Image (cartoon, rainbow, N blue to C red):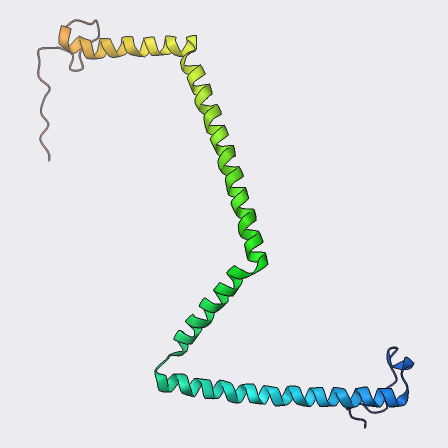
Length: 163
């Protein structure tokens, strides 16, 4: 068994161009780097435990630490080029949308104004005004030609008592 943990492994295409000494040197370096990674993981775990003990002694909760991490992360995100580019793009899109809606609103207002000035609308407005005068004016004048709701103008409406 060699240092990479392989038993008689066939050489890979990348390893075919290497001498035995170069391959052995690379395998030794690989083993050393993997061992360093394991050591660093152990050191990190010990540091995290120590950090937790310090937080507990200071009365800082895990929630407080999470809040600080989220705040720091959000700050980092806001400073990133991708966030800035997205923010810029959305701002431009918002400005364009606002301009487009303003244009549509102006067009609708203009069309409603045109419609209000049309002969058809004027005719409808006159008819509604005439009906309004007949309905409102009839109760004042007493004789508009429309039948009274009770059937006779002199009789009061019957009162209906609740059950």
